[in-house]
Image 1 (cartoon, rainbow, N blue to C red):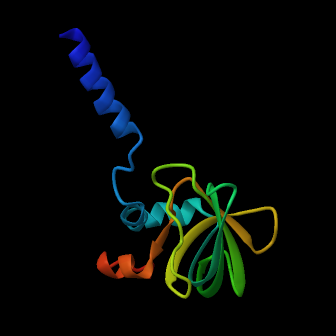
Image 2 (cartoon, rainbow, N blue to C red; image 1 turned 30 degrees about the vertical axis):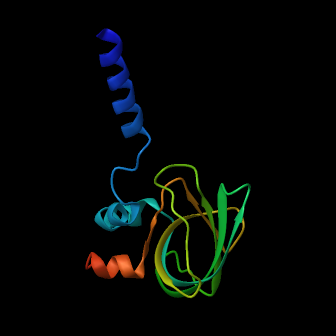
Length: 133
């Protein structure tokens, strides 16, 4: 009986500890004020291209910035999106639009997202009735 209870507890807690409890897009929308303070840049942009590297553990995405909300970002920028947790998500569908929160990297025009999908696709922002303004 002890083994059954122990097995159930291990399964219950191991599954919960590795799952993303809420959609990272929704969480980003709900915590956007905090994220605006925490991240170096925030912009609305069009995904121009994306490429998976490092055996699928990192995505390099190129954006054209449409509107900058923080960090005076303009033109074309590169986002290094590290896919290291269950709350990581990839940018999909070139020419689609996203609100992106990111941290500055060492190279000018290059920014990083590490482990948590700190961006909101335009469709999700509309669904949540969220806007940074």
